[in-house]
Length: 62
Image 1 (cartoon, rainbow, N blue to C red):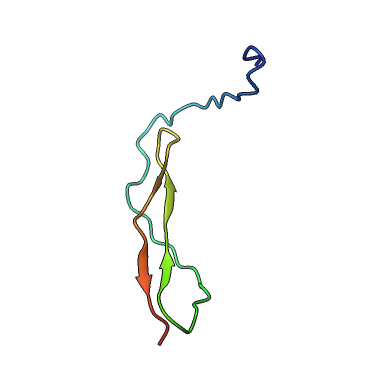
Image 2 (cartoon, rainbow, N blue to C red):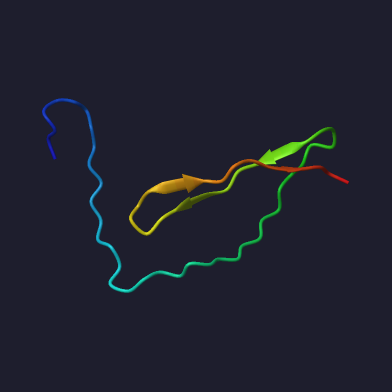
């Protein structure tokens, strides 16, 4: 869609007919630095298409 030459994009999508799950379990292996803290952030996309980020989670390799 032309947006008046502003080089902007529009993302259009349909929301689901039924509510989505509100819990998820996921495992992923993460390479940790052996020295100091490791900051991990988690990002999710909400049902309406917005992206939400966690605060950093600090872990140490042992």
